[in-house]
Length: 131
Image 1 (cartoon, helix red, strand yellow):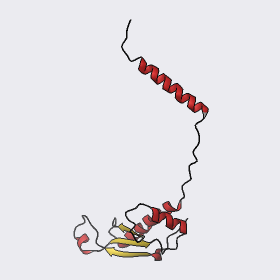
Image 2 (cartoon, helix red, strand yellow):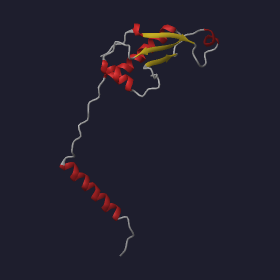
Image 3 (cartoon, one colour):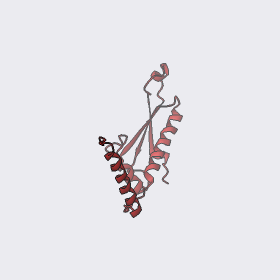
Image 4 (cartoon, one colour):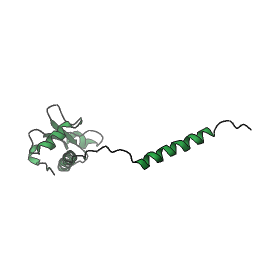
């Protein structure tokens, strides 16, 4: 498991958007967390998988930008941004298992063909009734 070093994350306080009254207009409590993926101390395979993600939060230079503005506290927003960043890294660190294609068993083929035959017979009986 790759752990984010908080010293590698650059935080900048910005004004939050949305409703909140006068507090939103005068206090910069939202946070932009900028994390340079290429310059980080993460393992190489995690960096590659992060950079390969099709995520709008990753810039062309390979910097991941997360905006946190849920709380009215700057510290809570920093913690939220770090938590979301760590969740993204954890997701990229998990290598999915490669699916090995298998052939259908003989029994499953027979069951499938029997079901198709029954379905066709039911549909054939839907026609007009003649004496």
